[in-house]
Image (cartoon, rainbow, N blue to C red; front, side, top):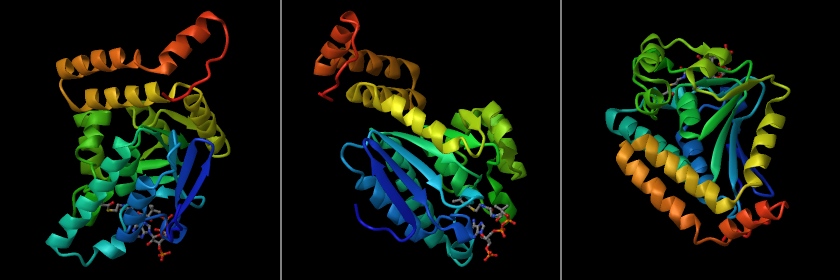
Length: 259
Ligand code: CAA
């Protein structure tokens, strides 16, 4: 994988970890970082089954889009910046790999929107989530008015967007913005354990189940139910279905071929 200026990328077994690495500006997303993230996602090692996204330093996951860079944008450049953000976050959503946000501090504006594009999030107790864009005279631009309401409902989303006030990790968990809150010290270990559990499961089945759930979140129930039925049927064309069920009956651990 290529070198990056604003990202750290490590891969071990089937788990790749991308760390947004601009700690001096609390990992703010400028155009260059978004382009690197897009490239990192496109160039993920082929065997990647879980992608973890986190931020560098003690304070922040990502404190938003880069305000210093945005300050002088004209409307055309701003719309282009929003399109870039959406393109990158949509690419994350479409990955076969399960994407986990490891939220180690502030996840504000574009940072909260990055969390929302991940499949789920685990947060440290010091994490803070919010959409403070209105305090800067703008609206959320990377999905804060679209994915947020799908995750937490319209009323909670509107409260976050209109007040611009952050919520702590515990509140974010109650809202369904994050799945689990653990201590700062336990965060990486918990995410690694979840990643390892995912990797133990049948690769094609995990990827297909993720696609089915994503479709269900984005479309009407009947269409999603029809897709689920087809996907379930397709699983029976895989070697892993035969192996998984045989291993169960033989009371042994399955050995997946990913085929
Ligand atoms: N963009 C650029 N620089 C940022 C930044 C951002 N989003 N967030 C923090 N920084 C910089 C600060 O300017 C500061 O730089 P200097 O040391 O050079 O002054 C450095 O990071 C450390 O930040 P603070 O000194 O402010 O740290 P703090 O602990 O006092 O406060 C904070 C932390 C509450 C997160 C505060 O930094 C903050 O409010 N940041 C901005 C959050 C924000 O508004 N995010 C939304 C951006 S708009 C957006 O994201 C649009 C979109 O939807 C696409």
